[in-house]
Amino acid sequence: MYSVHITNWWFAIGTGETEEEALLELQYLIDDFKNTESYLPRPGSVMPIKFASTQGFELHTETAEQFFDQVFGFAPLFISDESSLYDFDPVDEVTNLDKKIEEIFGVNVSDIKDRNLIKIFERIEQKF
Image (cartoon, rainbow, N blue to C red; front, side, top):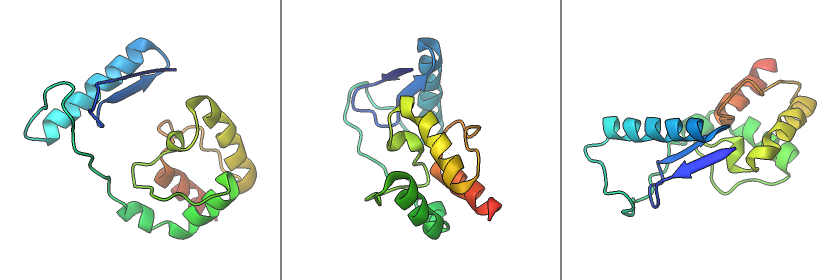
């Protein structure tokens, strides 16, 4: 697994199975930022942190509580609609989490490429 970033730019961290994939994701993130913001900061300049919305998470609080208790054994201090399994476990361990989630909840989430927690909670809720 490869990871590339621009120092101090919270929005510019590309990951991929190859260096080329990581660089392509980084380029996509920079292009997306340029399309949504009115400026592009100087490389290396400190960017203020923006927190993602929590509105989607608030729709799944019961599932989230059960999920974190059974999968991780703790409740996180903060998660947002953009949070993923990658935020809580190393990339190499996510496959093990996929198996654990399937054992506990009976749903396969390995096809959710970004491992977004809201998408996982929705899949769990669809089963029940």
